[in-house]
Image 1: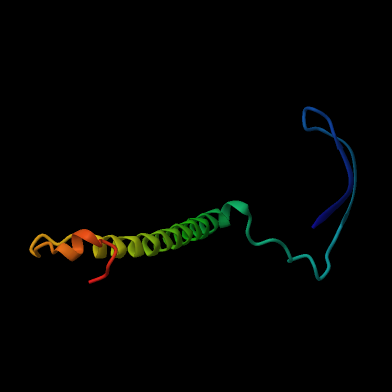
Image 2: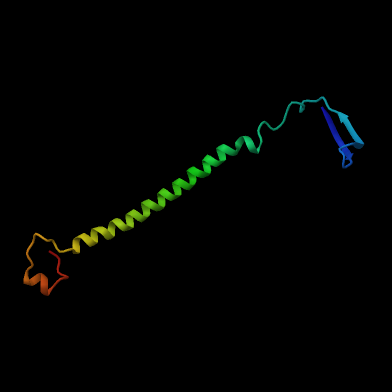
Length: 96
């Protein structure tokens, strides 16, 4: 493996000056086995899963809030099949 200390290249990719040496040691076969492009898909899937999880949490929180309000609204509604009493008309805040 050629290791460069200094290299000068002109605008036409011609080597003007080169200072290098041959390396044949234990680190010769080490290297990076992946690059940004190879992990791009996995990172995109992780990001999408994180975003969907966050949205699901927001929806659950919103449903919990709206669920409580709906139950309150249902308790205050007048039932059609029940007749109105004088007590209900004069005191609507009274619970049944």
